[in-house]
Image (cartoon, rainbow, N blue to C red):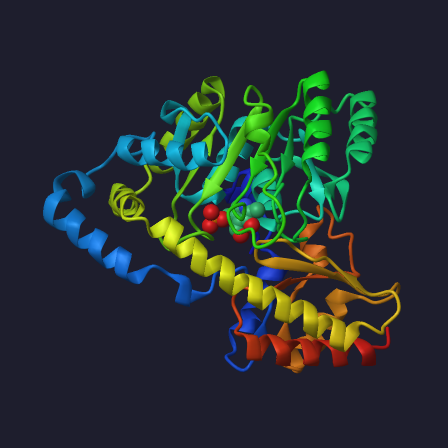
Amino acid sequence: MDRTSYFSDRANGMQRSVIRELLKLTHNPDIISFAGGLPAPQTFPVEYVKRATAKVLEEEHVKALQYGATEGDPRLRKKLAEIMKRDGIDADPDQILVTTASQQGLEIMAKIFFNPGDTCIVGLPTYLGGLQSIKSYGGVPVGVELDEHGMIPEKLVEMLDKLEAEGRRPRLIYLIPDFQNPAGVTIPLERRKEIVKIARDRDYIIVEDTPYRQIRFEGEHQQTFQSLAPERVLSLYTFSKIMLPGFRLGWAYGPEWLINKFIMAKQSMDLCTPPFNQAVTYHMLEEGALEAGLKIIIKLYHSRCNVMLEELEKNLGDLEGVSWTKPEGGLFLWLTLPEGMDTDELFKKAIEKNVAYVPGSAFFPKNEDHRSMRLNFSYSNEEKIREGCRRLGKLIKEYKP
Ligand SMILES: Cc1ncc(COP(=O)(O)O)c(C=O)c1O
């Protein structure tokens, strides 16, 4: 029965992610999955959560179990501003909006910026959830190529010229500057400055989505877009990867005029982010849970990343045309196979061999890539990473397109 007449055009335009459907297969415990973007559960700060939860229930339940302000708990916003200050941003707590993690930030972004048909610059590849939010409000993601240093400024200029000439001026530039999901690459400072100059000269807003920034295990921190161009950058942060994803807690930061729109848009979504989670997080931060946890996370992911890089070299190093990125932080790396290979097709064979990845096509606006895959190194232990890479290497080498 055709039920489309019940729904809005927007709902009828929504598609179930083929990838998410495929990824359900990876729930089989025999499968070594490099597919998800999950943090390692042993890094969850359980003891901090227990202590902070007890404190909130004993001392603050009247507030914590009540509705809260849309902007967020003022104590938490002050703490978040301190975290940002340590990162070189002159942050004002009044410009912070606590969000129900950064996916909500992306959803609000899409809600306030896009009329159906409006374009948005994204990286090629880019985060799948970002693409979904943009599309769900009728936005049209337009890809600009990345290399091992992130978005290429010359390609950005080319694309802006083209779109402007067609009268399709993009609403904004969406970037994941640090250890990008999915490619694992980071934009160096010089390139950040070039991109900022382009945005300033042409008056574009930049959305800087940066969930992995604090998970740097090699190299130098690169200045944020926020500190380079505070008048036009909206930054999205989240505790999901640096502490725990289960609280669904993040924050948006930007110029007042922009944050005000974000606040209005959030009001009709969920009124406020759970005050209980905010209060618990505040006390955890007071106790130093973030710093202590990050040390553990960085050490663990660094060694897991190294194991994956070592195994890829061992199992695929002699195959012509194959390459992979070497992240300095984060959770992912990006593997590209020789010409003619198809990672969507290979995925089914990989599942049969009990190893999983996300095919690169998921991260392109029109699913146009078929040679790449995203590999996650945060979730599986070293033994599994070694075995998974062996399986994957064998499969790729034996694969006849
Ligand atoms: C680039 C990027 N943005 C946003 C998110 C959403 O994260 P959360 O909603 O858990 O903060 C993710 C999650 O993987 C991501 O990689």
